[in-house]
Image (cartoon, rainbow, N blue to C red; front, top):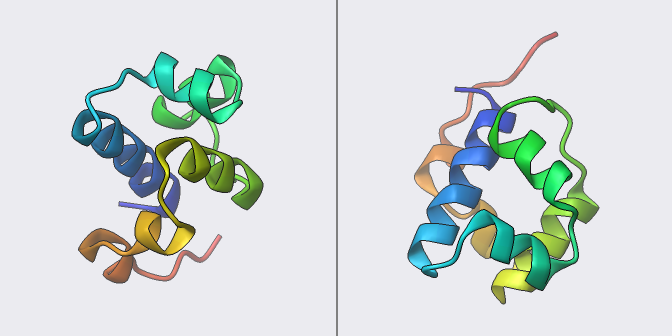
Length: 80
């Protein structure tokens, strides 16, 4: 699994944990629906940290909490 797939999976996981839809996350975070849909549907590979920070703010979590998972800790280095 690469980083963009892991980010997408984490966003979906956090929505489920918070009992909200991706659409609701867009509303509370101020990130456009098309941007989040592109992320969760793996249409974007380089997800900006500003976007992730906005999503975290909407979820009322820190960047550290977002990335503090086993999946992120175990990611292999991506060589393009």
